Image 1 (cartoon, rainbow, N blue to C red):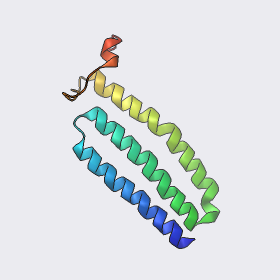
Image 2 (tube, rainbow, N blue to C red):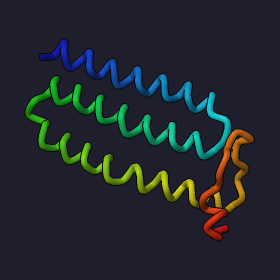
Image 3 (cartoon, helix red, strand yellow):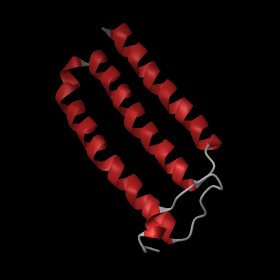
Image 4 (cartoon, rainbow, N blue to C red):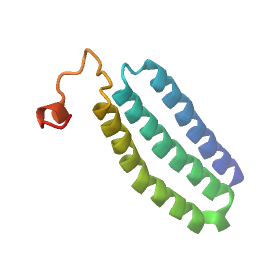
Length: 106
């Protein structure tokens, strides 16, 4: 089980690495927020699952951590995106539609 746990932890680290490359490639703050949120959510969940395989007696605590991350990461990224929009952060030229601006929320 320790080997399987180490492999899953390595996979979580790979997700973090690939997400960091996505942060560099994304054209604007809104896409970077989305990439960062996916990185922390998926990467952390996979890493914690690997730790659960490595230390089975920690599973209840790790499940609580995973639930906390799943519930809080989308909310925090939404708040950061709204704050960026309110402060006037520019969107990429490839962005087609601004739903918040259309709704009259500036």
